[in-house]
Image (cartoon, rainbow, N blue to C red; front, side, top):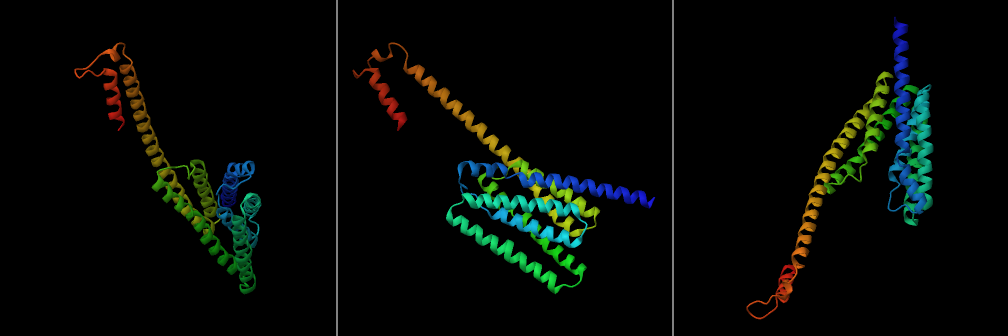
Length: 275
């Protein structure tokens, strides 16, 4: 009985991690259209490299964490893929960015991905002799960084609320991030790894809020567009009616009581409306 339940638990664990890996790869590949546009136009068009540098830093930390834990092959595999993809993004950005953006990107990579990461590795490897302590300290660091990464879209949500436009927050990305958080939460729960599961609770809640905000703002934008289209249609119809009435035969030949032609009177009326 215990053997059967353990086997079922391992199968659930494997299923969650496979699903988590597939969805995580889809999230990693989500910026591909942006980078294809950068490649085609040979310009970064004001895009920033910060999210990708931070994502690389997060993947590096989780890869280090998985290597310390040992035998967590799924966590090792997905974060290895993440490191590779994010490095490609940063390299492509650097190739087409203006000089100032290149310098900022290089400084950030050296400071965060080389400097801070190296300090963390040295502290954990040299100052913490116990393997369990190393895993716990690094687990806390990974959880904090992951929570910070999840919190980053809050600025985008504020921008969406202010602008009432959802162009800055694509729905598919929010959906897959939420789904990814659910899968990794389940995996952490099955593995009894709180450092994996707890940050993804925050990720799930934030993703849900993003999708609700998207739905609300999208409906708001649709209503405004509908009102604008109705107003434009009404203006066009009114203009069309004015053109028809001004083109009635014989109207220009009539003379008013002051001896002025009705055509001149129509011109005055038109000017009065224009003013």
